[in-house]
View 1: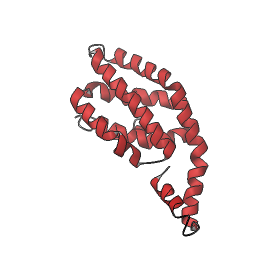
View 2: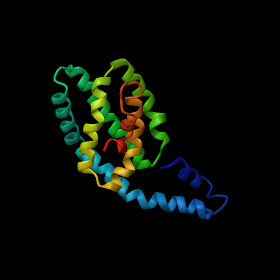
View 3: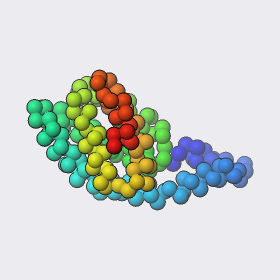
View 4: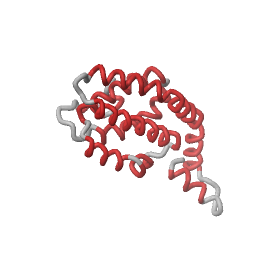
Length: 168
């Protein structure tokens, strides 16, 4: 649940919600069904998504070490899970507070930039096939957040590729 929505419920002792706050709650509730549906779909299809991405990465990078590809795939799974949770809660701070610091550290330690740059186009291709436009719109901001961290120091990257929506 968004921190703003959560804070609104803390004020129940003192007053009823004002129209702008009530509108925010209504918007949150209206998208909840779609967010739950997208979360379930990601949970249920994670293995299929990641297997297809793994096949693409190994075919595209035949000279890359398997351990570096595996490390990128492990991070991709965590990115999908944490992005899905942030989307479900509709909490923009969730990734920054709970996951992105870990992603930054891990990325620096394992130096998987060459694999990381190919990950998102392959991942996006799979997500485009699986999710409808509304679900993608709910999930994309969180995936974009993680993507910016993952490829932040890669040189010669087209700036338009720094967002999931800019790739296609």
